Image 1: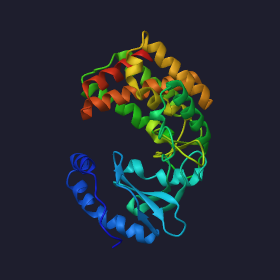
Image 2: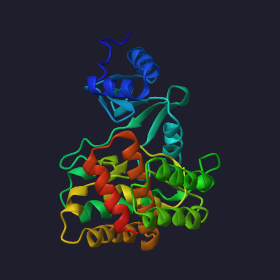
Image 3: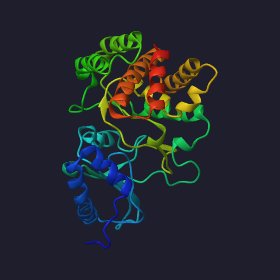
Image 4: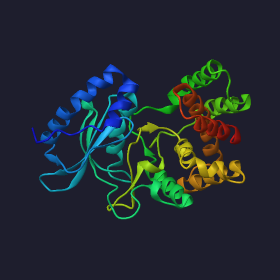
Length: 308
């Protein structure tokens, strides 16, 4: 043992058990021993308290052999986390944190530490929304590189997406206007198959872009999807929802933010709008199904309709 076992944050443990049940409880019980094993194998030691995201813990560490700061990330085994290290390996530090070590069977990685410089730690701390969206768009452009074989192509999911849109609409009692659902299905049919063989982040929101000393900003937590870079537009609308909802013309405000992203990412504005609209429909369905706060669901429904 390296020393005192890591302390798993109580809130993370609670949410994991609520979401995953006994499987989550069993996984949580293994975390202290697993982290200790990885500290030894990758020759590092913890330096600060454990933090977490929705599905994984992050332990700030220092590599013993060169004193370089890094983080140990261990995620709950889930299909959405499988390709994260592959994306980091492809980017090799270009616009994203560097991957130092990986243990795919344990869903564990040793990564470059970012977000520790002076000033804004993530794009969420940048007050000027246009500036933050522009940074995210430019980063999306840098991350959009030719994808290797073996990563999931979103074009292969088109039939599944269309079925899900129809089924969720029916089972939830058609909560959104019919024209919004029809527009989302049209986007999936028309743009779903017409996607480049390009690696994209897949979940590019403000808190997934951290300040760094090596580069001004670096991405974390990619999904490792292959498809249309315009697909990431929705996350930058759902970040700071309140400013869109309170704008004199929410639709115009949403379209303007999409235009800022699209121009910075060098993607077609209308493709960005259509993907954002389709994904807003999906997000509204998901929120109703899984108990998102009512205001978030209503705001997402309004966004889906406004972008139709």
